[in-house]
Length: 293
Image 1 (cartoon, rainbow, N blue to C red):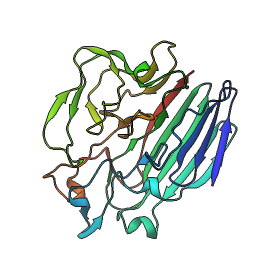
Image 2: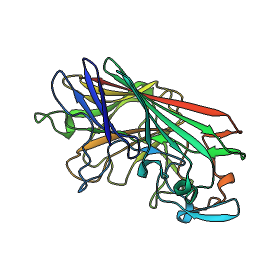
Image 3: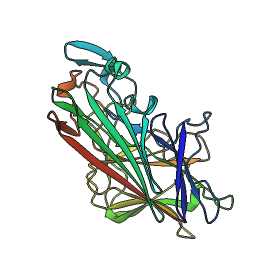
Image 4: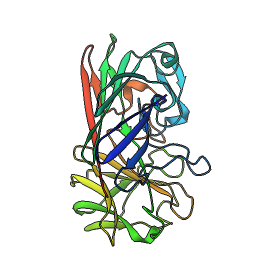
């Protein structure tokens, strides 16, 4: 089921399947600003990545003495969440461990996803609570996809990714199979912008580490229109799009954990995590996205 909230500037719609934002409408101009999930290109909009980001070595994990299969980015994006709160400017969804999730990941938890509107900004907070007896280790991240070009008058070459400050973005490589391979490369040196081209993602995403900027935006160069994501506090920020040409959307993905390693451990307790919670503890992160249109 889908629920919407709106203010004078934006109308946000979120689906209980995955607690995924599926539409962001600019009410002044009527434009849809979120990618609409064309399955011939990429069938998602803005999935939540939990309880891990990226892939598992061998597509499996070992946890509590048993083996569990795992697809890319965890399971939260593929199951129903319960809508638990709706006000004029806020939607909150909840996913709690149940028989379905325990077959995929043998831990008790609650994941709350809260969307709040403030002028032209959407704040999406994810809170993880440990409701079990064991230490809860998890990975987590965001994966929103923004439609480009913003209108029919513009093309791919009219856009760039723009940092708040000068950066030399160092990227960790997960080629060719989506697992870390120990190599790294610079996407640029002493730059403020990364030009968007139809070739930028021909080899998949770029995972930048330890950026200093507080924001990363996709900017229409002639008009200044932009989608601006707050990335402060995130150790990893990815940019990505599907291989379709011309580019139809771009993703800005702040993560608190990384994909698995080619020769890394399959034991869940040895996988680097975003947080480790004792019973009753909780942890929250927030992504703020401003639609400067």
